[in-house]
Image 1: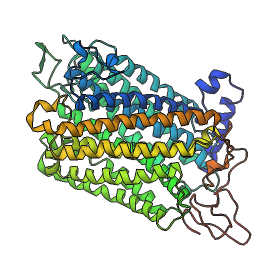
Image 2 (image 1 turned 90 degrees about the vertical axis):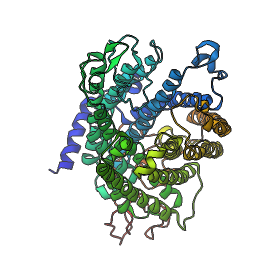
Image 3 (image 1 turned 90 degrees about the horizontal axis):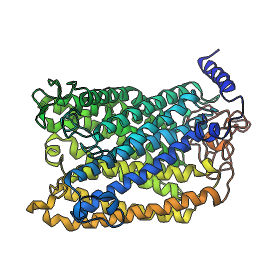
Image 4 (image 1 turned 30 degrees about the vertical axis):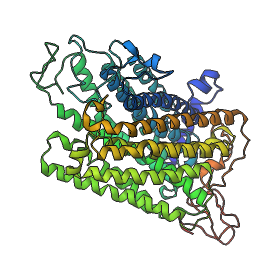
Length: 603
């Protein structure tokens, strides 16, 4: 018996034991082991935190536009200091928690948790994940993290305020010192739980994709979404243990006075902060060894989803399927050897810095391969400008801008000038908001019919896209202009310095755009919840797509498929001469006289 057959048989036995009886409400919707329910649980949780992270961002923007003025409506809730003003320390907490929430509670779990859970078994033809109970635990391990982060806002001294990177010595002072705060300790605990949750997910995804593919589903017949999730799971499996170990070390530094990151002789509030003798730079190496691959954990799944959406609505095979696969693998490999470019300011040996600089510039090559493949896919196509396609195309254009600005930072001399400016903030938001978030919106509009059996409103979807696109660029493109002028990040009131006072009008323009962008997300929220209950019902394959999830009932029941899918071809056979329709599902047997043995992109 092959390893594939053994894996499938073992999984069937596990399911017979785990799902042999009807579960009650709690077992069906709360502590569910069904990958689709878990995916939707991740989706709702992350969208809720998206609102929290967005409000924190608006508070940051308000302070930069109108320093020390109370923000209407949310101001009284946020700003409790005298006269409605906030302190510089509170401002530091705002941008720390904004970045922490958006990265660890929104982008990573919505891509790997929500879409990974919902799509992987459906797109490979499996009935569930390899380890359903572990899958359930991967979601519920997020809840202690949610509670830690929420509680941190209410402890004395407030939430973490050392930046989302948590650099010592700012973050690692011993909590026995007078005046030290609990917020940073809760932040560390929260991230540890997020890390454990992600490691559970990565093991499950790797096992499921390797062992549980449907008959005929070779690795080179997998859709790009699954390839991206597979490589993302590899990144998580290898990089996350490093960060988790570093978080435990900093937690011990803060709570029991160890000396992993606390340098010798450090005194906080007239009290010696622990044993000393530690290395502050060690934290940076451990943190960025995870967090640079994490940048690709935050973008690769969106790249895969966008590839599927573009091919579907261009009605053409994906251009260069195998180069796309190899470029994802190349991004993952290079992603592990470029972490030092975050540390050009740390006094690094110039020879070492040169190595990191060259490898960082090289990582632009596989990214460029993907961009040209997307352009090749839409070249000469009869594009259907649906809402998912608009978001997917905007993902490509925004990723190009974010990627090109990143090449500036790869050059050590340039980075030394722009490292602490708003140029960096503009770059990361083009990649992670204009890129990842637009990819996520495209994915939600695209797979919403499969999740809920109803279609979202196309008109309001396009209004949401247009407003988001315009106000996004109004907010973040201007950050590059400010950054080139030296405008500093992390300062609550840069206008205290005369050289930055003429930049306040541009900050006010950006803040107005950011407020409008936040308001335009209300259209998405209304469309999402209205369509869930009242949207037009759809059949199995409303987009006329080829991949396996559209072969399942809508919405898929327990076990996903009402018959065993058998795969005959790759996922991008649009416009095939073998059939009269412009799509050719992976499960459709070839016509008489056509022996179809090729993988993706070949007739």
